[in-house]
Amino acid sequence: MDIDDSLAAAHINIDLLYIKFISSFRKHTAIFFFCLETQYSNHFYLKMCASNLVSSVCKKIIKPYFPTPTSLRCHKFSYLDQMVGGIYVPFAFFYPKLSNTWSDKPSNVISEHLENSLSKVLSHYYPFAGKLNENISVDCNDRGVEFFTTKIDCPMAKILKDPYSDKEDLVYPKGIPCTYSYEGSLAVVQLSYFNCGGIAVSACLTHKVGDGYTIANFIRDWATIARNPSSKIQSPQFNAASIYPPTKDMVNLPEIVPKGEECSSKSFAFSSSKLAALKSMVINNSVVQNPTATEIVSAFIYQRAMATKKKTSGSICPSVLVQAMNLRPPLPKTLMGNIGSFFSVITTEEKEMDLPRVVGKLREAKQEVRKKYKHDKTDEFLPMTIELFREANDSFFNNSCYDIYRFSSINKFPFYDIDFGWGKPEKVSLASNGPVKNMFVLIDNKSRDGMEVVSCMKEQDTSALERDEELLKFTSPSN
Image (cartoon, rainbow, N blue to C red; front, side, top):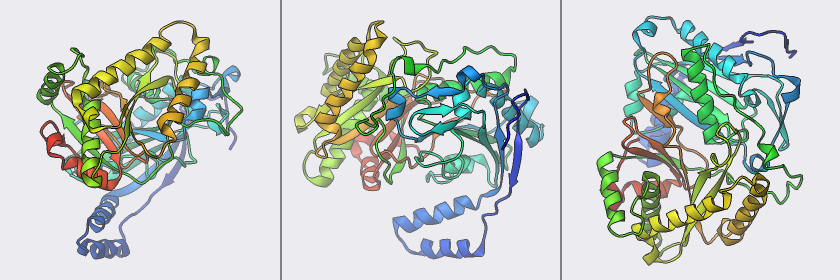
């Protein structure tokens, strides 16, 4: 399709597609499986019922408001970008009631409001509107991003309060959350209308172009422009390849994100009082007297996951806690892409599972890695990072004897301030059933005094963890 670069408008091409999900075959198949009194059949039935709630889907292509300059048309991947697979990172924001100025507006006005502001933010985050050129670069050709609009035939409360997460996933573009193989645009958005008047806005962006920090800034800047189209946002810089030069040796390139597996998700909520109780336990028995909420929760979840695995297997399995680390600072906060490192704690004996001990080792490992990067000699960042991954690969990443538990914390980012003009979200969530085994994402709760942990584990491990009595003393499954 030809692109007219002279257009300085939203560049919206409409491809309307109505999809009807209800059929007697599906209905009777779902009922048949429901009658099989097994966990699998119940899960299958609920997924079928959930899909029947979607009455229509409309798809548009949103292109950058201003054409990307010729000098920026080729976005080269950094070494870290090359290490990341093509997984999509999914966020959803639920707004059960729009502010008075928006509550009476027709749905097409709300859609256009989001489409126009998305078009403008894409001019700043132009690689997301481009096309992948293998594992080398992004052709920033302004081909645009997919924007879906759906109608969900139930109140939002039914989605948020349902103990099964399949219904909540209806607010994401079908088949895209946490996928490795999507061949569409590098960013995909969905606006969902509920029959109660509430809406949900979800965004799935490829990890190949940016990490959680990059994606969070994209969403924040999009909301800022939506509230005030004349807002001046701090220009993001997509030049990480100058700090982490890419490699031509794709064969020996390590992977940050492992291959996908079939997993199930669960969300665990930690209240402020439970966090305080855990912190007190750590302080009373550890050299770390100022543990962060991230350190405490990561160590606690890791400890309980190991403990439940020991119960089912009969013996402790050598395990590793791997915590992702953002390198902004020392690198500029405006630098976008995959800008990070990691630190780890290895546990091989039962006596090493003690919570204060794990927190202490976690702090020690973090400080050690921070010290390596705490200088302005950015030309040394790449060799340091390569060496760090080489050591980890030799020690545990490539060793099947170890269970790897990966933790990523985004609890410092104000997701509950994401306001597109009609108020702040009631709920912020990640899609369920991600493909990365033993992955845990930490995010603040709405009141900012507690934390939510979204887990992704094998079905049997999830089931064992959510029944762990020690875990349930301090948290409760919230999904």
